[in-house]
Length: 120
Image (cartoon, rainbow, N blue to C red; front, side, top):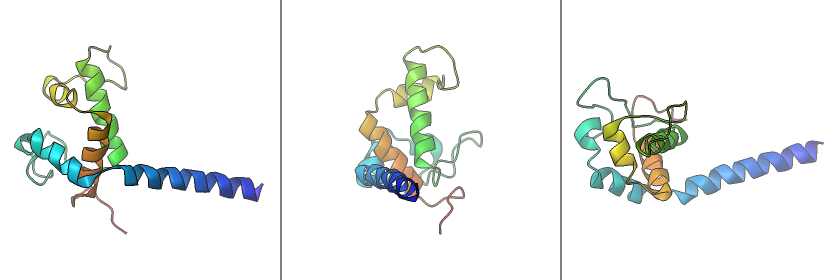
């Protein structure tokens, strides 16, 4: 029983490490710059042009990736649900992103210093 638990824990840990290694932070920054995300979310991804826009720096990468995929679904005309975000501006930007782009930009944003980050 203990061996099974240990093996399962190792698989989960390896999966998390493999996912984080798959993200290319330089490519994530390039996506950020290419789409000019700073024009709304601020150069540091903390101070946006509108207080209602979310802080992105230091946010969890998996949350950011899920949000971008939800905007893609919204832009594709999917019916409203918990996994669909309908926003014309964000949908138009998210629609341009590949799966790898989403992984990269999400990882890059998560690595940025911000008030949402918890560093140990």
